[in-house]
Length: 127
Image (cartoon, rainbow, N blue to C red):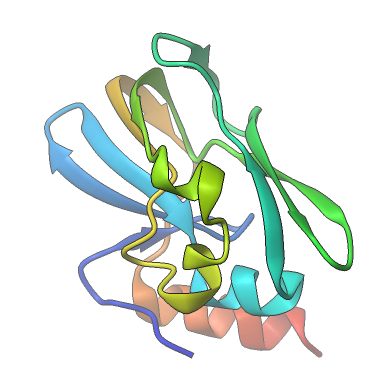
């Protein structure tokens, strides 16, 4: 599994890359895509939609199930990765390049973890 050190991670398996004081890019972690299996559909929010921490902002469908993607931060959607609408498997191929949304006006976040903390969290979850 790959967990880039420059990213932060949520307990619901999203990664967060802060790109400014109140701006971030959000996607699914390598662990999440591995657990979900082959993704066949992604449902993303509209630009301008606002979300609270732990609110479902998207869902992904795999051959196994449909899963909600929870917002690790509170903010407003500035952009969505439209490429994923036609090619959701990009998340399986490279989860850290296949971002889901860009959010702005971030006002709060969940307790985000470092890469090392997230790796320990996954190990403890698997027991």
